[in-house]
Length: 158
Image (cartoon, one colour):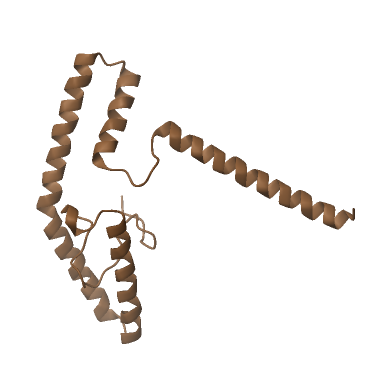
């Protein structure tokens, strides 16, 4: 075999083995941490945290029940808060998006509107649209920018 071909095959083999090792490691990480199967939901997060607290703090059964009740009540409070601030959040977001549109020329506005539609479809596919009453959806047909964490969005300020 020619040295150049042999080198190319070895390089390809190294790449394939590296990709397989990376994929396997990432899969094991997801299984170990419990984050698999789509975006996290509040109930799933609560169960994940309850399991972790139970293991790491060695909670007794009565402590586990009390912590679970606290987490459930807190989750309900957060749900009510999301419902309260959701309309205000969407109003601010829509106003921001409309202001951005005023800066753009007509060609840019068309592209921007297409991006907005794409972001809205992604939100709906993830189940985070307006139907949930959460703060992540936006009024239909409004001009939009992606929210922090969405593909194409700037990182959230911390």
